[in-house]
Length: 280
Length: 310
Image (cartoon, rainbow over all chains, first blue to last red; front, top):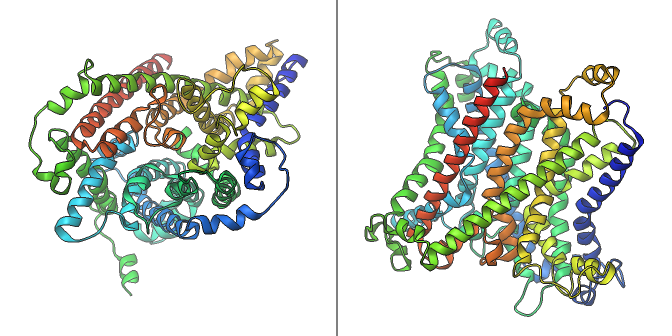
Protein backbone atom coordinates (compact mmCIF):
# COMPACT_ATOMS: atom_id res chain seq x y z
CA UNK A 1 0.00 0.00 0.00
CA UNK A 2 1.25 3.50 -0.80
CA UNK A 3 0.45 6.64 1.26
CA UNK A 4 -1.91 5.26 3.87
CA UNK A 5 -3.72 8.15 5.63
CA UNK A 6 -3.65 8.53 9.43
CA UNK A 7 -7.13 7.04 9.87
CA UNK A 8 -5.98 3.91 8.09
CA UNK A 9 -2.97 3.64 10.38
CA UNK A 10 -5.15 3.99 13.46
CA UNK A 11 -7.51 1.31 12.23
CA UNK A 12 -4.51 -0.91 11.59
CA UNK A 13 -3.19 -0.41 15.10
CA UNK A 14 -6.55 -1.09 16.78
CA UNK A 15 -7.30 -4.10 14.59
CA UNK A 16 -3.91 -5.70 15.13
CA UNK A 17 -4.05 -5.17 18.89
CA UNK A 18 -7.51 -6.73 19.18
CA UNK A 19 -6.58 -9.61 16.92
CA UNK A 20 -3.41 -10.31 18.87
CA UNK A 21 -5.43 -10.36 22.10
CA UNK A 22 -7.95 -12.79 20.58
CA UNK A 23 -5.18 -15.00 19.24
CA UNK A 24 -2.97 -15.10 22.31
CA UNK A 25 -5.53 -15.19 25.14
CA UNK A 26 -5.91 -18.99 25.11
CA UNK A 27 -2.13 -19.36 25.09
CA UNK A 28 -1.81 -17.04 28.09
CA UNK A 29 -4.62 -18.88 29.89
CA UNK A 30 -2.84 -22.15 29.22
CA UNK A 31 0.42 -20.82 30.60
CA UNK A 32 -0.94 -19.02 33.68
CA UNK A 33 -3.39 -21.75 34.66
CA UNK A 34 -0.69 -24.38 34.38
CA UNK A 35 1.19 -22.56 37.15
CA UNK A 36 -1.78 -22.33 39.53
CA UNK A 37 -2.60 -24.47 42.56
CA UNK A 38 -5.78 -26.55 42.24
CA UNK A 39 -8.00 -24.27 44.34
CA UNK A 40 -7.26 -21.40 41.94
CA UNK A 41 -8.63 -23.20 38.89
CA UNK A 42 -11.60 -24.56 40.82
CA UNK A 43 -12.77 -21.12 41.94
CA UNK A 44 -13.67 -18.03 39.90
CA UNK A 45 -11.14 -17.23 37.19
CA UNK A 46 -8.19 -15.02 38.10
CA UNK A 47 -5.63 -13.65 35.68
CA UNK A 48 -2.72 -13.88 38.12
CA UNK A 49 -2.09 -17.08 40.13
CA UNK A 50 -2.49 -16.65 43.91
CA UNK A 51 0.73 -18.57 44.19
CA UNK A 52 2.97 -19.74 41.37
CA UNK A 53 3.64 -23.47 41.54
CA UNK A 54 5.29 -26.04 39.31
CA UNK A 55 3.32 -28.80 41.02
CA UNK A 56 1.00 -29.44 38.02
CA UNK A 57 4.02 -30.17 35.83
CA UNK A 58 5.08 -32.89 38.25
CA UNK A 59 1.60 -34.31 38.80
CA UNK A 60 0.63 -34.62 35.12
CA UNK A 61 2.87 -37.66 34.73
CA UNK A 62 1.27 -39.46 37.67
CA UNK A 63 -2.44 -38.67 37.28
CA UNK A 64 -2.48 -40.38 33.89
CA UNK A 65 0.20 -42.37 32.02
CA UNK A 66 1.14 -39.28 30.03
CA UNK A 67 4.55 -40.66 29.11
CA UNK A 68 3.02 -43.64 27.38
CA UNK A 69 0.62 -41.41 25.45
CA UNK A 70 3.50 -39.22 24.30
CA UNK A 71 5.38 -42.28 23.06
CA UNK A 72 2.27 -43.61 21.27
CA UNK A 73 1.60 -40.25 19.61
CA UNK A 74 5.24 -40.01 18.54
CA UNK A 75 5.25 -43.49 16.99
CA UNK A 76 2.00 -42.91 15.15
CA UNK A 77 2.81 -39.39 13.95
CA UNK A 78 6.37 -40.22 12.84
CA UNK A 79 5.24 -43.49 11.24
CA UNK A 80 2.48 -41.94 9.18
CA UNK A 81 4.68 -39.01 8.20
CA UNK A 82 7.49 -41.23 6.91
CA UNK A 83 5.09 -43.48 5.00
CA UNK A 84 3.13 -40.70 3.37
CA UNK A 85 6.16 -38.58 2.46
CA UNK A 86 8.10 -41.51 0.97
CA UNK A 87 5.18 -42.68 -1.12
CA UNK A 88 4.24 -39.14 -2.11
CA UNK A 89 7.77 -38.41 -3.38
CA UNK A 90 7.56 -41.32 -5.82
CA UNK A 91 4.01 -40.50 -6.91
CA UNK A 92 4.70 -36.75 -7.10
CA UNK A 93 7.75 -37.34 -9.26
CA UNK A 94 5.75 -39.55 -11.62
CA UNK A 95 2.88 -37.10 -11.95
CA UNK A 96 5.06 -34.01 -12.27
CA UNK A 97 7.67 -35.37 -14.70
CA UNK A 98 5.97 -37.95 -16.90
CA UNK A 99 3.04 -37.81 -19.28
CA UNK A 100 1.23 -41.13 -19.14
CA UNK A 101 -2.22 -42.53 -19.62
CA UNK A 102 -4.34 -42.23 -16.47
CA UNK A 103 -2.34 -39.30 -15.10
CA UNK A 104 -5.34 -36.99 -14.97
CA UNK A 105 -7.60 -39.60 -13.41
CA UNK A 106 -4.99 -40.21 -10.73
CA UNK A 107 -4.61 -36.53 -9.82
CA UNK A 108 -8.35 -35.94 -9.80
CA UNK A 109 -8.89 -39.00 -7.59
CA UNK A 110 -6.21 -37.91 -5.14
CA UNK A 111 -7.58 -34.39 -5.07
CA UNK A 112 -11.12 -35.54 -4.48
CA UNK A 113 -10.27 -37.88 -1.61
CA UNK A 114 -9.03 -34.78 0.19
CA UNK A 115 -12.53 -33.42 0.46
CA UNK A 116 -13.99 -36.53 2.05
CA UNK A 117 -14.74 -36.26 5.74
CA UNK A 118 -12.78 -38.56 8.04
CA UNK A 119 -15.98 -40.00 9.42
CA UNK A 120 -16.65 -41.50 5.99
CA UNK A 121 -13.56 -43.70 6.26
CA UNK A 122 -13.69 -44.31 9.98
CA UNK A 123 -16.80 -46.49 9.98
CA UNK A 124 -15.75 -48.92 7.24
CA UNK A 125 -12.14 -49.01 8.43
CA UNK A 126 -13.34 -49.90 11.91
CA UNK A 127 -15.52 -52.68 10.51
CA UNK A 128 -12.74 -53.95 8.23
CA UNK A 129 -10.25 -53.96 11.12
CA UNK A 130 -12.69 -55.95 13.25
CA UNK A 131 -13.26 -58.38 10.41
CA UNK A 132 -9.58 -58.84 9.62
CA UNK A 133 -8.94 -59.45 13.31
CA UNK A 134 -11.69 -62.07 13.47
CA UNK A 135 -10.67 -63.98 10.38
CA UNK A 136 -6.88 -63.73 10.29
CA UNK A 137 -5.98 -62.84 13.87
CA UNK A 138 -4.04 -59.77 12.75
CA UNK A 139 -4.90 -57.20 15.38
CA UNK A 140 -5.21 -53.95 13.44
CA UNK A 141 -7.97 -52.68 15.67
CA UNK A 142 -6.35 -51.00 18.66
CA UNK A 143 -2.83 -51.25 17.22
CA UNK A 144 -0.46 -48.42 16.39
CA UNK A 145 0.14 -49.86 12.92
CA UNK A 146 -3.57 -49.79 12.20
CA UNK A 147 -3.75 -46.19 13.35
CA UNK A 148 -0.81 -45.23 11.11
CA UNK A 149 -2.63 -46.81 8.19
CA UNK A 150 -5.79 -44.81 8.86
CA UNK A 151 -3.80 -41.58 9.19
CA UNK A 152 -2.62 -42.09 5.63
CA UNK A 153 -6.23 -41.48 4.53
CA UNK A 154 -5.66 -37.77 5.10
CA UNK A 155 -1.88 -37.33 5.00
CA UNK A 156 -1.18 -39.19 1.76
CA UNK A 157 -3.51 -37.23 -0.58
CA UNK A 158 -2.34 -33.95 0.91
CA UNK A 159 1.33 -34.92 0.55
CA UNK A 160 0.92 -36.02 -3.06
CA UNK A 161 -1.03 -32.90 -3.98
CA UNK A 162 1.49 -30.56 -2.37
CA UNK A 163 4.55 -32.32 -3.74
CA UNK A 164 3.21 -32.34 -7.31
CA UNK A 165 2.74 -28.59 -7.01
CA UNK A 166 6.19 -28.11 -5.55
CA UNK A 167 7.96 -30.34 -8.08
CA UNK A 168 6.22 -28.48 -10.90
CA UNK A 169 7.94 -25.32 -9.70
CA UNK A 170 11.41 -26.89 -10.01
CA UNK A 171 12.87 -26.34 -13.48
CA UNK A 172 12.84 -29.46 -15.60
CA UNK A 173 16.24 -28.52 -17.04
CA UNK A 174 17.81 -29.86 -13.85
CA UNK A 175 16.58 -33.39 -14.56
CA UNK A 176 17.50 -33.09 -18.20
CA UNK A 177 21.03 -32.06 -17.33
CA UNK A 178 21.30 -35.08 -15.05
CA UNK A 179 20.02 -37.34 -17.83
CA UNK A 180 22.64 -35.91 -20.19
CA UNK A 181 25.26 -36.74 -17.57
CA UNK A 182 24.09 -40.33 -17.70
CA UNK A 183 21.84 -40.55 -14.66
CA UNK A 184 18.91 -42.92 -14.87
CA UNK A 185 15.48 -41.77 -13.69
CA UNK A 186 15.91 -43.35 -10.25
CA UNK A 187 19.32 -41.76 -9.76
CA UNK A 188 17.95 -38.43 -10.99
CA UNK A 189 15.16 -38.65 -8.47
CA UNK A 190 17.46 -39.41 -5.54
CA UNK A 191 20.38 -37.15 -6.45
CA UNK A 192 18.72 -34.17 -8.11
CA UNK A 193 15.00 -33.96 -7.55
CA UNK A 194 14.79 -34.89 -3.87
CA UNK A 195 17.49 -32.40 -2.77
CA UNK A 196 15.97 -29.65 -4.92
CA UNK A 197 12.52 -30.37 -3.53
CA UNK A 198 13.70 -30.42 0.09
CA UNK A 199 11.75 -27.32 1.20
CA UNK A 200 8.56 -28.85 -0.21
CA UNK A 201 9.30 -32.21 1.36
CA UNK A 202 9.97 -30.61 4.74
CA UNK A 203 6.74 -28.63 4.47
CA UNK A 204 4.75 -31.77 3.72
CA UNK A 205 6.44 -33.69 6.52
CA UNK A 206 5.81 -30.94 9.08
CA UNK A 207 2.21 -30.69 8.03
CA UNK A 208 1.65 -34.46 8.14
CA UNK A 209 3.26 -34.70 11.54
CA UNK A 210 1.21 -31.83 12.93
CA UNK A 211 -2.10 -33.21 11.70
CA UNK A 212 -1.30 -36.68 13.00
CA UNK A 213 -0.19 -35.26 16.36
CA UNK A 214 -3.50 -33.42 16.68
CA UNK A 215 -5.82 -36.06 15.24
CA UNK A 216 -8.79 -36.96 17.40
CA UNK A 217 -11.43 -38.83 15.40
CA UNK A 218 -9.58 -42.02 14.44
CA UNK A 219 -7.65 -42.07 17.70
CA UNK A 220 -10.81 -41.95 19.78
CA UNK A 221 -12.24 -45.07 18.14
CA UNK A 222 -9.25 -47.15 17.04
CA UNK A 223 -7.05 -47.13 20.15
CA UNK A 224 -7.18 -49.09 23.40
CA UNK A 225 -5.63 -48.62 26.85
CA UNK A 226 -2.09 -49.39 25.72
CA UNK A 227 -2.09 -47.61 22.36
CA UNK A 228 -4.05 -44.49 23.36
CA UNK A 229 -2.60 -41.26 21.96
CA UNK A 230 -2.45 -37.83 23.55
CA UNK A 231 -5.58 -36.70 21.74
CA UNK A 232 -7.68 -39.17 23.71
CA UNK A 233 -5.48 -39.55 26.76
CA UNK A 234 -5.69 -35.93 27.92
CA UNK A 235 -9.36 -36.49 28.72
CA UNK A 236 -8.13 -38.59 31.63
CA UNK A 237 -7.60 -35.48 33.78
CA UNK A 238 -11.36 -35.23 34.12
CA UNK A 239 -12.60 -37.61 36.82
CA UNK A 240 -16.19 -38.25 37.89
CA UNK A 241 -16.04 -35.41 40.40
CA UNK A 242 -13.20 -33.11 39.42
CA UNK A 243 -11.36 -31.75 36.45
CA UNK A 244 -7.72 -31.02 37.25
CA UNK A 245 -7.70 -27.96 35.01
CA UNK A 246 -4.24 -26.85 36.09
CA UNK A 247 -2.86 -30.24 35.09
CA UNK A 248 -4.85 -30.21 31.85
CA UNK A 249 -3.27 -26.87 30.97
CA UNK A 250 0.23 -28.01 31.98
CA UNK A 251 -0.08 -31.18 29.90
CA UNK A 252 -1.50 -29.24 26.94
CA UNK A 253 1.46 -26.92 27.09
CA UNK A 254 3.95 -29.77 27.33
CA UNK A 255 2.53 -31.59 24.30
CA UNK A 256 2.25 -28.34 22.32
CA UNK A 257 5.79 -27.07 22.81
CA UNK A 258 7.54 -29.56 20.49
CA UNK A 259 5.10 -29.08 17.59
CA UNK A 260 4.94 -25.32 17.95
CA UNK A 261 8.73 -25.09 18.18
CA UNK A 262 9.11 -27.31 15.12
CA UNK A 263 6.50 -25.30 13.28
CA UNK A 264 8.07 -21.93 14.02
CA UNK A 265 11.52 -23.26 13.18
CA UNK A 266 10.40 -24.69 9.85
CA UNK A 267 7.83 -21.99 9.14
CA UNK A 268 9.92 -20.61 6.29
CA UNK A 269 9.85 -23.97 4.49
CA UNK A 270 6.20 -24.44 5.24
CA UNK A 271 5.27 -21.13 3.69
CA UNK A 272 7.50 -21.82 0.69
CA UNK A 273 5.96 -25.26 0.25
CA UNK A 274 2.44 -23.99 0.66
CA UNK A 275 2.90 -21.17 -1.82
CA UNK A 276 4.46 -23.34 -4.48
CA UNK A 277 2.06 -26.22 -3.92
CA UNK A 278 -1.24 -24.59 -3.18
CA UNK A 279 -1.27 -20.99 -4.28
CA UNK A 280 0.14 -21.11 -7.78
CA UNK B 1 24.28 -54.29 -3.36
CA UNK B 2 20.58 -54.41 -4.13
CA UNK B 3 20.47 -50.63 -3.85
CA UNK B 4 23.20 -50.40 -6.48
CA UNK B 5 21.24 -52.63 -8.78
CA UNK B 6 18.09 -50.57 -8.28
CA UNK B 7 19.98 -47.37 -8.97
CA UNK B 8 21.51 -48.60 -12.19
CA UNK B 9 18.31 -50.25 -13.35
CA UNK B 10 16.58 -48.46 -16.22
CA UNK B 11 13.11 -49.63 -17.06
CA UNK B 12 11.39 -48.54 -20.25
CA UNK B 13 10.20 -44.96 -20.06
CA UNK B 14 6.61 -46.11 -20.54
CA UNK B 15 6.54 -48.40 -17.53
CA UNK B 16 8.41 -46.19 -15.10
CA UNK B 17 5.62 -43.79 -14.06
CA UNK B 18 3.34 -46.69 -13.23
CA UNK B 19 6.06 -48.31 -11.19
CA UNK B 20 6.54 -45.07 -9.25
CA UNK B 21 2.82 -44.82 -8.69
CA UNK B 22 2.47 -48.42 -7.57
CA UNK B 23 2.84 -47.85 -3.80
CA UNK B 24 0.49 -44.87 -3.92
CA UNK B 25 -2.05 -46.79 -5.99
CA UNK B 26 -1.92 -49.81 -3.70
CA UNK B 27 -2.45 -47.61 -0.66
CA UNK B 28 -5.21 -45.60 -2.31
CA UNK B 29 -6.96 -48.88 -2.94
CA UNK B 30 -6.42 -50.02 0.63
CA UNK B 31 -7.28 -46.86 2.52
CA UNK B 32 -9.73 -45.08 0.25
CA UNK B 33 -11.37 -47.27 -2.34
CA UNK B 34 -12.05 -50.45 -0.36
CA UNK B 35 -13.31 -48.60 2.75
CA UNK B 36 -15.53 -46.41 0.59
CA UNK B 37 -17.08 -49.37 -1.20
CA UNK B 38 -17.48 -51.14 2.13
CA UNK B 39 -19.22 -48.06 3.49
CA UNK B 40 -21.66 -47.98 0.60
CA UNK B 41 -22.30 -51.71 0.95
CA UNK B 42 -22.88 -51.44 4.70
CA UNK B 43 -25.34 -48.61 4.17
CA UNK B 44 -27.71 -51.17 2.60
CA UNK B 45 -27.47 -53.48 5.61
CA UNK B 46 -29.25 -53.65 8.89
CA UNK B 47 -26.04 -53.41 10.86
CA UNK B 48 -26.91 -52.89 14.51
CA UNK B 49 -25.08 -53.97 17.68
CA UNK B 50 -26.30 -57.58 17.27
CA UNK B 51 -24.24 -58.06 14.14
CA UNK B 52 -21.05 -56.17 15.00
CA UNK B 53 -18.90 -59.24 15.45
CA UNK B 54 -20.10 -60.73 12.22
CA UNK B 55 -21.16 -57.72 10.30
CA UNK B 56 -20.87 -59.18 6.82
CA UNK B 57 -23.77 -61.44 7.70
CA UNK B 58 -26.08 -58.64 8.77
CA UNK B 59 -29.39 -58.80 6.90
CA UNK B 60 -29.87 -56.82 3.72
CA UNK B 61 -32.38 -54.02 4.03
CA UNK B 62 -32.16 -52.22 0.73
CA UNK B 63 -32.84 -48.52 1.05
CA UNK B 64 -34.33 -48.72 4.55
CA UNK B 65 -31.38 -46.90 6.16
CA UNK B 66 -31.68 -44.07 3.66
CA UNK B 67 -35.42 -43.84 4.21
CA UNK B 68 -34.87 -43.56 7.95
CA UNK B 69 -32.18 -40.90 7.46
CA UNK B 70 -34.37 -38.68 5.27
CA UNK B 71 -37.68 -39.28 7.06
CA UNK B 72 -37.83 -35.79 8.49
CA UNK B 73 -41.02 -36.42 10.48
CA UNK B 74 -39.39 -39.11 12.59
CA UNK B 75 -36.82 -38.36 15.33
CA UNK B 76 -33.73 -39.71 13.52
CA UNK B 77 -34.42 -37.84 10.29
CA UNK B 78 -35.44 -34.68 12.09
CA UNK B 79 -32.25 -34.55 14.13
CA UNK B 80 -30.17 -35.24 11.02
CA UNK B 81 -31.87 -32.37 9.21
CA UNK B 82 -31.30 -30.12 12.23
CA UNK B 83 -27.66 -31.14 12.28
CA UNK B 84 -27.36 -30.39 8.55
CA UNK B 85 -28.74 -26.86 8.94
CA UNK B 86 -26.59 -26.20 12.00
CA UNK B 87 -23.53 -27.32 10.03
CA UNK B 88 -24.44 -25.08 7.07
CA UNK B 89 -24.96 -22.00 9.26
CA UNK B 90 -21.77 -22.76 11.19
CA UNK B 91 -19.76 -23.24 7.99
CA UNK B 92 -20.97 -20.03 6.34
CA UNK B 93 -20.27 -17.99 9.47
CA UNK B 94 -16.93 -19.55 10.29
CA UNK B 95 -15.55 -19.50 6.73
CA UNK B 96 -16.81 -15.96 6.16
CA UNK B 97 -15.29 -14.60 9.34
CA UNK B 98 -12.03 -16.54 8.97
CA UNK B 99 -11.65 -15.28 5.44
CA UNK B 100 -12.46 -11.69 6.41
CA UNK B 101 -10.09 -11.60 9.38
CA UNK B 102 -7.37 -13.35 7.38
CA UNK B 103 -7.70 -10.87 4.51
CA UNK B 104 -7.69 -7.76 6.69
CA UNK B 105 -4.76 -9.08 8.71
CA UNK B 106 -2.76 -10.03 5.60
CA UNK B 107 -3.33 -6.60 4.04
CA UNK B 108 -2.37 -4.80 7.24
CA UNK B 109 0.84 -6.75 7.69
CA UNK B 110 1.84 -6.44 4.05
CA UNK B 111 4.07 -3.40 4.60
CA UNK B 112 7.07 -3.85 6.83
CA UNK B 113 6.93 -2.35 10.31
CA UNK B 114 8.76 -2.98 13.55
CA UNK B 115 7.65 -6.21 15.21
CA UNK B 116 5.94 -7.58 12.12
CA UNK B 117 7.86 -10.86 12.22
CA UNK B 118 6.89 -11.41 15.84
CA UNK B 119 3.26 -10.59 15.11
CA UNK B 120 3.15 -13.02 12.21
CA UNK B 121 4.59 -15.79 14.36
CA UNK B 122 1.96 -15.07 17.03
CA UNK B 123 -0.80 -15.17 14.43
CA UNK B 124 0.27 -18.63 13.34
CA UNK B 125 0.07 -20.07 16.86
CA UNK B 126 -3.56 -21.26 16.69
CA UNK B 127 -2.67 -23.10 13.51
CA UNK B 128 0.42 -24.71 15.02
CA UNK B 129 -1.11 -25.84 18.32
CA UNK B 130 -2.46 -29.40 18.43
CA UNK B 131 -6.25 -29.31 18.11
CA UNK B 132 -7.04 -30.96 21.43
CA UNK B 133 -4.64 -28.81 23.45
CA UNK B 134 -6.07 -25.61 21.99
CA UNK B 135 -9.73 -26.58 22.11
CA UNK B 136 -9.44 -28.01 25.64
CA UNK B 137 -8.13 -24.60 26.71
CA UNK B 138 -11.16 -22.95 25.11
CA UNK B 139 -13.46 -25.34 26.92
CA UNK B 140 -11.77 -24.28 30.17
CA UNK B 141 -12.31 -20.66 29.22
CA UNK B 142 -15.98 -21.34 28.51
CA UNK B 143 -16.68 -23.01 31.89
CA UNK B 144 -19.59 -21.20 33.54
CA UNK B 145 -18.18 -20.61 37.03
CA UNK B 146 -14.43 -20.93 36.59
CA UNK B 147 -13.93 -19.73 33.03
CA UNK B 148 -12.30 -16.60 31.68
CA UNK B 149 -15.12 -15.72 29.29
CA UNK B 150 -17.74 -15.25 32.00
CA UNK B 151 -15.20 -13.59 34.27
CA UNK B 152 -14.51 -11.07 31.53
CA UNK B 153 -18.10 -10.55 30.36
CA UNK B 154 -19.82 -10.64 33.74
CA UNK B 155 -17.37 -9.73 36.50
CA UNK B 156 -15.17 -7.27 34.66
CA UNK B 157 -17.19 -5.70 31.83
CA UNK B 158 -20.69 -6.28 33.35
CA UNK B 159 -22.10 -7.06 29.92
CA UNK B 160 -24.23 -10.01 31.01
CA UNK B 161 -26.73 -9.97 33.86
CA UNK B 162 -26.22 -13.55 34.86
CA UNK B 163 -23.35 -15.87 34.02
CA UNK B 164 -24.46 -17.70 30.88
CA UNK B 165 -23.72 -21.32 30.06
CA UNK B 166 -21.56 -21.59 26.95
CA UNK B 167 -21.18 -25.30 26.41
CA UNK B 168 -24.85 -26.27 26.67
CA UNK B 169 -27.95 -24.68 25.16
CA UNK B 170 -28.11 -22.11 22.38
CA UNK B 171 -24.88 -20.33 23.34
CA UNK B 172 -22.94 -23.42 22.35
CA UNK B 173 -23.28 -22.35 18.71
CA UNK B 174 -21.52 -19.07 19.47
CA UNK B 175 -18.82 -20.86 21.45
CA UNK B 176 -18.24 -23.37 18.65
CA UNK B 177 -18.06 -20.71 15.95
CA UNK B 178 -15.66 -18.59 18.00
CA UNK B 179 -13.25 -21.48 18.49
CA UNK B 180 -13.52 -22.48 14.85
CA UNK B 181 -12.73 -18.96 13.61
CA UNK B 182 -9.85 -18.74 16.08
CA UNK B 183 -8.45 -21.99 14.68
CA UNK B 184 -8.90 -21.35 10.97
CA UNK B 185 -8.28 -17.65 10.30
CA UNK B 186 -4.48 -18.10 10.58
CA UNK B 187 -4.59 -20.46 7.62
CA UNK B 188 -6.38 -17.81 5.54
CA UNK B 189 -3.80 -15.30 6.75
CA UNK B 190 -0.89 -17.55 5.82
CA UNK B 191 -2.23 -18.30 2.35
CA UNK B 192 -3.20 -14.71 1.60
CA UNK B 193 0.13 -13.35 2.84
CA UNK B 194 1.81 -15.67 0.36
CA UNK B 195 -0.59 -14.50 -2.34
CA UNK B 196 0.13 -10.84 -1.61
CA UNK B 197 3.84 -11.35 -2.15
CA UNK B 198 3.14 -12.05 -5.81
CA UNK B 199 1.64 -8.61 -6.45
CA UNK B 200 4.28 -6.30 -7.93
CA UNK B 201 4.79 -3.13 -5.92
CA UNK B 202 4.90 -1.06 -9.12
CA UNK B 203 1.16 -1.59 -9.49
CA UNK B 204 0.54 0.27 -6.25
CA UNK B 205 3.05 2.96 -7.14
CA UNK B 206 1.39 3.56 -10.48
CA UNK B 207 -2.03 3.65 -8.84
CA UNK B 208 -0.83 6.10 -6.16
CA UNK B 209 0.59 8.35 -8.88
CA UNK B 210 -2.80 8.30 -10.56
CA UNK B 211 -4.26 9.53 -7.28
CA UNK B 212 -5.82 6.31 -6.05
CA UNK B 213 -6.38 6.25 -2.28
CA UNK B 214 -5.73 3.29 -0.02
CA UNK B 215 -9.26 1.92 -0.33
CA UNK B 216 -9.14 2.15 -4.13
CA UNK B 217 -5.76 0.41 -4.18
CA UNK B 218 -7.21 -2.44 -2.13
CA UNK B 219 -10.34 -2.68 -4.23
CA UNK B 220 -8.74 -2.32 -7.64
CA UNK B 221 -5.38 -4.05 -7.16
CA UNK B 222 -5.21 -6.20 -4.04
CA UNK B 223 -8.54 -7.98 -4.16
CA UNK B 224 -8.55 -8.79 -7.91
CA UNK B 225 -4.96 -10.08 -7.70
CA UNK B 226 -5.92 -12.34 -4.82
CA UNK B 227 -8.85 -13.85 -6.70
CA UNK B 228 -7.15 -17.10 -7.79
CA UNK B 229 -5.82 -17.62 -4.26
CA UNK B 230 -9.24 -16.92 -2.78
CA UNK B 231 -10.94 -19.47 -5.03
CA UNK B 232 -8.79 -22.27 -3.64
CA UNK B 233 -8.75 -20.90 -0.11
CA UNK B 234 -12.52 -20.63 0.26
CA UNK B 235 -13.03 -24.16 -1.05
CA UNK B 236 -10.44 -25.61 1.31
CA UNK B 237 -11.84 -23.68 4.27
CA UNK B 238 -15.36 -24.81 3.37
CA UNK B 239 -14.38 -28.49 3.27
CA UNK B 240 -12.38 -28.33 6.51
CA UNK B 241 -15.04 -26.47 8.40
CA UNK B 242 -17.97 -28.49 7.12
CA UNK B 243 -16.20 -31.74 8.02
CA UNK B 244 -14.69 -30.51 11.28
CA UNK B 245 -14.84 -33.11 14.00
CA UNK B 246 -12.04 -32.11 16.37
CA UNK B 247 -13.47 -28.81 17.55
CA UNK B 248 -17.03 -29.91 18.47
CA UNK B 249 -15.89 -33.26 19.80
CA UNK B 250 -13.35 -31.81 22.22
CA UNK B 251 -15.59 -28.91 23.17
CA UNK B 252 -18.76 -30.90 23.83
CA UNK B 253 -17.82 -34.58 23.93
CA UNK B 254 -19.73 -37.42 22.29
CA UNK B 255 -23.15 -35.78 22.41
CA UNK B 256 -23.13 -32.16 21.24
CA UNK B 257 -25.93 -29.78 22.24
CA UNK B 258 -28.65 -29.50 19.62
CA UNK B 259 -27.62 -25.96 18.66
CA UNK B 260 -24.06 -27.06 17.87
CA UNK B 261 -24.64 -30.59 16.58
CA UNK B 262 -22.26 -30.69 13.60
CA UNK B 263 -22.77 -33.41 11.04
CA UNK B 264 -19.49 -35.27 11.68
CA UNK B 265 -20.21 -35.66 15.38
CA UNK B 266 -23.82 -36.48 14.59
CA UNK B 267 -22.81 -39.39 12.36
CA UNK B 268 -20.19 -40.48 14.90
CA UNK B 269 -22.86 -40.49 17.58
CA UNK B 270 -25.34 -42.40 15.42
CA UNK B 271 -22.73 -45.03 14.63
CA UNK B 272 -20.52 -45.51 17.65
CA UNK B 273 -22.74 -44.45 20.52
CA UNK B 274 -26.06 -45.90 19.44
CA UNK B 275 -24.31 -48.69 17.49
CA UNK B 276 -26.31 -48.33 14.32
CA UNK B 277 -23.66 -48.62 11.62
CA UNK B 278 -26.12 -49.08 8.77
CA UNK B 279 -27.80 -45.76 9.43
CA UNK B 280 -24.44 -44.08 10.08
CA UNK B 281 -23.09 -45.31 6.75
CA UNK B 282 -26.19 -44.14 4.93
CA UNK B 283 -25.73 -40.69 6.46
CA UNK B 284 -22.04 -40.69 5.43
CA UNK B 285 -22.96 -41.54 1.84
CA UNK B 286 -25.55 -38.76 1.78
CA UNK B 287 -22.94 -36.36 3.18
CA UNK B 288 -20.49 -37.42 0.49
CA UNK B 289 -23.06 -36.76 -2.25
CA UNK B 290 -23.76 -33.34 -0.81
CA UNK B 291 -20.05 -32.43 -0.70
CA UNK B 292 -19.50 -33.70 -4.24
CA UNK B 293 -22.46 -31.65 -5.44
CA UNK B 294 -21.34 -28.43 -3.74
CA UNK B 295 -17.70 -28.83 -4.80
CA UNK B 296 -18.48 -29.55 -8.44
CA UNK B 297 -20.98 -26.69 -8.58
CA UNK B 298 -18.34 -24.40 -7.06
CA UNK B 299 -15.61 -25.56 -9.44
CA UNK B 300 -17.99 -25.26 -12.40
CA UNK B 301 -19.08 -21.73 -11.49
CA UNK B 302 -15.58 -20.47 -10.70
CA UNK B 303 -13.95 -22.00 -13.76
CA UNK B 304 -16.67 -20.51 -15.96
CA UNK B 305 -16.29 -17.04 -14.52
CA UNK B 306 -12.54 -17.39 -14.76
CA UNK B 307 -12.95 -18.23 -18.42
CA UNK B 308 -15.02 -15.07 -18.87
CA UNK B 309 -12.26 -12.98 -17.32
CA UNK B 310 -9.60 -14.13 -19.71
